[in-house]
Image (cartoon, rainbow, N blue to C red):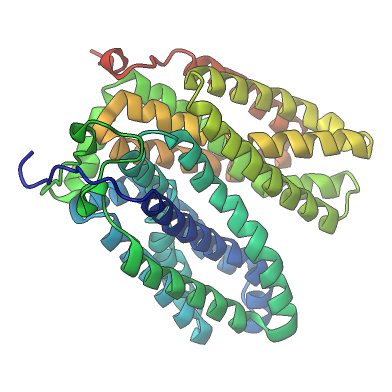
Length: 427
């Protein structure tokens, strides 16, 4: 056991939910900061005379860092602890948003929103939720991951309408001050209440009965080397490629495709922009329900079969989407509800399967799997635009994405469920 104290105390259950609450708040604030540019884009263009290309370039950097920081975030959390990395990441959000209130040039915008805020949100991505869930919860882990994952949709639902109202009433500077203050509150709460692992307060993870289940090795290795070693471990495993490949399709079919191109597709079919934006908001509501339910199911059902159905049904819905856009309101409403329930329902089962396959290394390995998700999102965001230019509509794009989702359902069913037999090395 080394320096790790044997957790023998029976602590009040409230401490687990305090840790979960602080983590949820951190992810919520991070999601709110990430959503701000969609409201600030036009005000920035009007205030500084910037082109759309100038405004979107830093946001592209932000999106890339959001995905690529994941595996390194997991390595830093293992070396320095969850609490220090959370405080550091939230402090970057405070710094980046508050300083942007006085920015005047495009390079300042790129530095603050592209690099500083990009790293801050990247360090508070889904990897943080997976790390907290794996360390603090043995039981109800899937439910906790589902709640953490739903924080992204919750943040957008809370902050986007608020930001839009603030911009129209007080101007864009007030929005960045609201994001800075929200991040500062999260910093203070994390500094006061957050703990790295149950052993820090002499207890076991929620639902654990064996002290060995609580041991989390503190690595002294360079975090960058740890991240690359995690990638090496993952790439030698068949399960890693199946999870990363399916998660690539997940990002491609959600953030990259629907999140980026649904509104333009609606406009082509005569659906007003306000109505289309409202559809995305409604999806966010059902996203919270579907992801939380998926977490609950992943504690009770085989995660491979959950993913099989999620990807398969998502694929069918994407093939159906072109017809829904041309049909009555009812058909489009069915798509909105169904797709919202399925939006990120894939995350809790994916985290569960990664944990089963890679054990104590699952945090860093999941970071790389998450990076593949964001790579898929970037591919769809850019690729769908090219295909639309070639074909003149999104019909072909939606059908191809649907076929890829059905293909992903075939990937996940090949993953082995138990850790003892799941890591099959290639070559």
